[in-house]
Length: 59
Image (tube, rainbow, N blue to C red; front, side, top):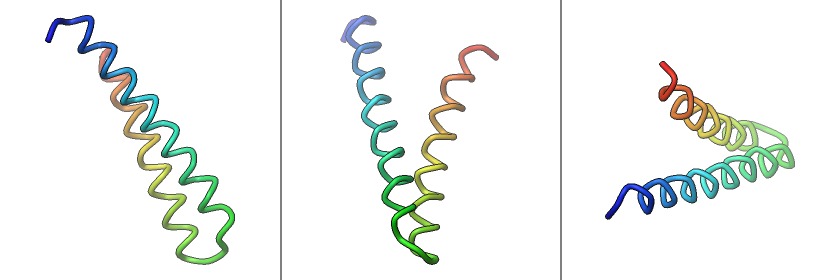
């Protein structure tokens, strides 16, 4: 696999993961209680992981 294909695949997977994490936060907001909070925290953890991966390049 060449470098360009690897970059495209990584970017595409990151975008899909971002959409899933935002959806988790929105779905968790609709549920009141501990279960909704846990879903929102899972989505937030995913977003923080994406931010960490992005910032790691500029260390």
